[in-house]
Amino acid sequence: MTKCITGLNRIISQYDVLFSDIWGVLWDGQTLFSHVTETLAELQRHSKQTILITNAAKSPQWIENNLAAAGLDRHRYHAIVSSGSVCFQHLANEQTCKRVYLIGRAVDRSYLSQLNCRFVDDIDQADCIILMSLDSDHIGIDYYDALLASASKRQLPLYCANPDYRFVDRSGQSMIRAGTIAERYTTQYDGLSKYFGKPHRDIYEHCLALVPDVDKKKILAVGDSILHDIQGAKAQGIDSLLIRSGVSQDISVEECLERSGADYLAESFIW
Image (cartoon, rainbow, N blue to C red; front, top):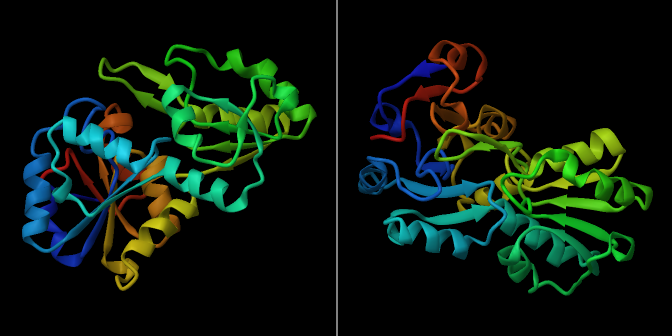
């Protein structure tokens, strides 16, 4: 049963490590939420490690730089593990994608250029699709249908570096994300999609490898998404705290308590 808490200080004595989401918990993509720096400082003062685990198709260094620009000092957390870095590592190890059709932006191409692959602009020349981010925040899902249909005919694998389906921007508007496109490829076109990031196992394995001597019972996962943060943690046998912000901001307290499956519920990331 989910328990409401007023702050982390109520439960932190049970845990040694936090796996904390970033967007919707620590910041809105541009600005840190109030109390975040103070809360991370208190966690450090109590000898707790915080690993930032995020469904972002970006390198940890890119994320670190953006957090620093928003005012979050690097020494306030132990490490960053992103879905983008997990996807990158998988592709680097497998080396099966040689001719890549990229769905993404310039920053994504720059990151993936470190792989031993060639980018192609014609789907008929590709041997895989790497889905990092949408071409625009305002593109509808049907924009990609012709591409997905062509890829399906050739049975191309699609590697999705961010399994989020939607996100809520600073104005409160909900927009589709890469996970929605990958799911459509599978359900509508019978394509093969491989996901990296929460709630899937790979990203948790990367985080757990950073704290090999810590029992899962001493880890608390914190996030704003029931589907990604809470269900992902539950599948790994890790306790979870749902923050009622970000994608959960419009879900009532009663509904969160009834259906989230989280161990704890709080209004914000506060000590």
